[in-house]
Amino acid sequence: MQPWYWKKDCNFFGISPEIVLGIMKVLPLFEAEGLDFQIISAISGEEKHQDGYAVDIFSRHAVEVWGAVQLKTEINGFTERCQKSLGPQYKFILVDFRGDDEHFHLECQLPSDRVLRGDEAGSLSGKAQVLENA
Image (cartoon, rainbow, N blue to C red; front, side):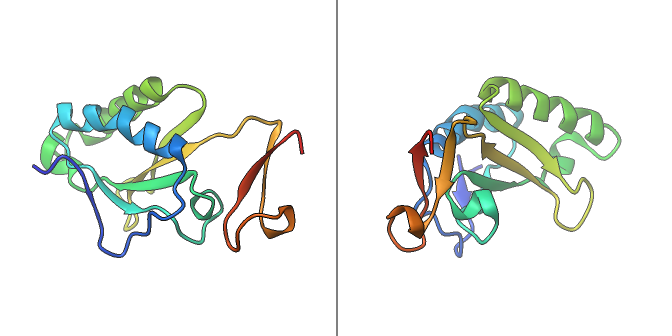
């Protein structure tokens, strides 16, 4: 097993330090379970993704580790352990269980007094910046 890797077409330019920290917090939990950690989406067109505050992690291999019978119980327990490790400033959820787009979504929750702003706030083209008490 490789410790972690990502799809070739996955763009990481502009990813937030908070997401890097979140990855570092959950990676040992994936390793302890014998799960690969493959990032399938980082910077993309979706809201939190385009601002660098979310990544998607491949989960389909979980059935090979836990088996089909106990999969839902095991994957729910694993998701809860990851969320507990991350704390309330993060959201760690399983998306589209048993669907074609099944994956874990790791997202940093910005405090309510911090607002993302794009170009109108004077940031670099296409990148968001965080403004305190905007």
